Length: 265
Ligand code: NDP
Ligand code: 8X3
Image 1: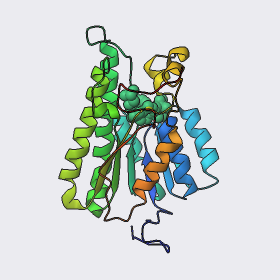
Image 2: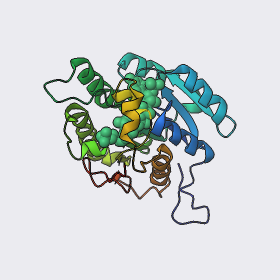
Image 3: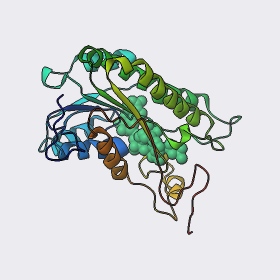
């Protein structure tokens, strides 16, 4: 990729480059896909829900080139097979957004479910590693690429009952730092975007479809919208190549930290 300034010294022109987004079927990933499409970034969109990927492909295909991959990030063979299946038009990945992930449950450590723990560690940590490992060789060969890891405020401070979800996001924080060190000599940019409360399907997944409980999380204050995070991710990727936003924490104004949220209920 060549840095062009397009009349502005502060923005990198990304038209025609390709972004690989995991967790593109919902929330932050979907909003980022839409944002990127508006800027004519070509898209490889991933998730497990085929019908949502088909819908995105139809909607965003009018703005940019879109290819979809349906796989579970926990399945390392499926990750590799999917990446290997990319047609030549989409096989050069310039930007990787490691976004797929969720919280499963909100229970004290003595009451948490083993299946929930497996899900969070397998998806949020190991899935991110499998996808990265599969795409890294080509970035290393080209000595160029940008990886954005979606962490969380939960990876910066532990909150009650957050235990294993927080552990998974602390791991993302550690992996983000480790990747930046180990890929430094190849000129690859690595950074994390760590959101606080964003209104997506996140809480619905955490509370296993209990929408009353999920909606309650965002009541009485103005949470972030997935588009707020997409806007920030676009800002991060569109910096000139010598500028790397390494670690960014963003919360709603009503939120001071993981446990303090100003609510008017
Ligand atoms: P959503 O539930 O709206 O989206 C989660 C996405 O991850 C979906 O596209 C889902 O796709 C995908 N996904 C989940 N499990 C798997 C899997 N096993 N294999 C492949 N894809 C999977 O949540 P958000 O948009 O909020 O979450 C996105 C990221 O942001 C997560 O990493 C989350 O931890 C992080 N985050 C969210 C915050 C929030 O408050 N919402 C705050 C801080 C961080 P599908 O089901 O189709 O596979
Ligand atoms: C998602 C936000 O506050 O549930 O990472 O940890 S929180």
